Length: 303
Ligand code: PLP
Image (cartoon, rainbow, N blue to C red; front, side, top):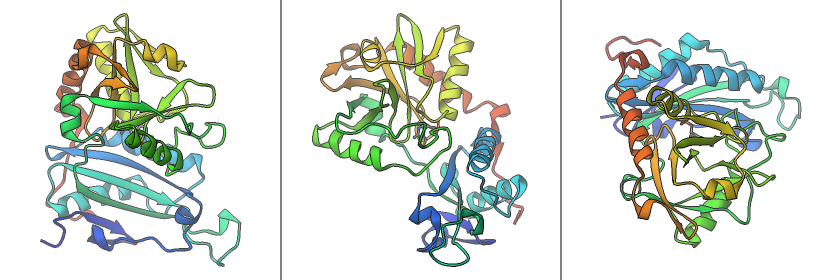
């Protein structure tokens, strides 16, 4: 099948994901002047599609990006690509780049034609499934910090990943599964593609700043509220974080994942803690709630 590896919508056309491309003079490539959002299709329905569209629109507005497509057209493109791919579990990315300048080399962002495109591939587990099952080993980066939020707004989902990539190499050199970055002030920020939570004295703690306001984070916070678990959204100094009883990550690509080790410290005797388990199960239960699901429209061509 033409779209079995995934599908893309670009310049008004439905194409195989491998054929989607971005020009070498596009500021998305040359200046990381681009934003994106990722929504998952879980069992044939988008999970929290309107929340992802809200965040994508807010990110575009923050960067003063205005593609030709409105929300309805963007939503339609997402349905079109997933329907074409035939995928029932999918990682679906919507992207808006500054685009290529009218005259190559000029420095005026107002003279670039903003460029929306979308693509989907089979569902992605940000932390591989086998690692998630045994519990992840996090490494706190020592050689690099998360880019300052006064320089790049982390609430705008971005491709400024130089810090994450450097951190990942450091983590892999230490035999860890993935990395956690701190901010310049030593508080916990986030990892490459996930937010983090600590469970301390039965309370759930997560950073207030220096991170993306993840949709999974929001879902976990809602699940905690429903379960009567107290929540603190605040600055979390690294030492404070490391003294937790339980730690877990949260991302659309795989949901909450238990962390059983950070650097050389073992949590919960190396197995998932009870609060993490409760919230992870509550998260997956929420993915089946009809109010949070938008079934993929398979028959209609919405382009
Ligand atoms: N933080 C970063 C840097 C991310 O890239 C992501 C998602 O890819 C997240 C956090 C988690 O966000 P969400 O739960 O919306 O997937």
